[in-house]
Amino acid sequence: MNRQLKRVAAAGAVAASAVLVLSAPAFAHVSVQPQGEAAKGGYATVNFKVPNERDNASTTKLEVSFPTDHPLASVMPQPVDGWDVKVTKSKLDKPIEMHGEKIDEAVSKVTWTADDKGIEPGTFQQFPVSVGALPEDADQVVFKALQTYSNKEVVRWIEEPQEGAPEPESPAPVLKLTEAADGHGHDAAADKADKASDDAKSGEGATEQAASDSSDGLARGLGVAGILVGAAGVAFGVLAGRRRGESAS
Image 1 (cartoon, rainbow, N blue to C red):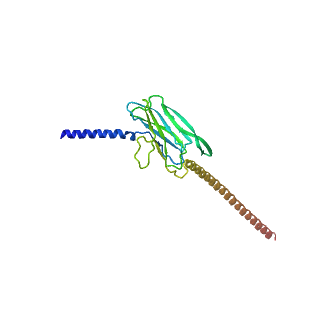
Image 2 (cartoon, rainbow, N blue to C red):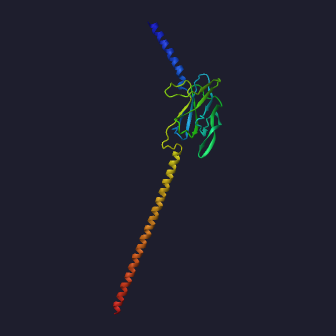
Image 3 (cartoon, one colour):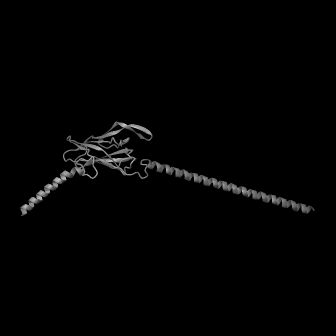
């Protein structure tokens, strides 16, 4: 009986190990997350997170392909210590407009190559990139990534996840987009700044108007006082003249 229980336990342990091995890639794939939010039509800084899945090799290169169906006119990688970065641009089949100018090329790939050891076993590395303008007519942006190890192995994270389907074995990094708070995306901050400037100008105008009104009121008050004083002087003169006439009589 004890021997049978041991066999069952051993079989269970083997099965559990197999499940962990098979499911590991789903938990340790290359992913992308924004710093804060990635709003439609706006700009965002995103991090490509690269974990090392191997015990006997380091990750020495990461290649991220950018979408061609929603090209991003502005892509600026942040320098990462120990890594060289190369930005590749390609001609667009259909030019896009950005800030009133037509753009006929966009970044198609960014490649990071390790100067030294790279991402060692049991560690991960993040690669920040500023991107924009994000599409306004999509809920997500899909990137495709190639992860190269020091033993020349290349893992292709290129499978696009499908809604309602299990996660692919090698899922591509997916950036989820949020709705712009006021529908203007990147222009929201500029709009707020413009509004603040307008409010400040309105405040200055109100202050100047109040000062002007105050000066006008003071002038009018002094004018009225002058008239009253003048009228009083005339009345006093007339009265004095009458008294002198009466005295002479």
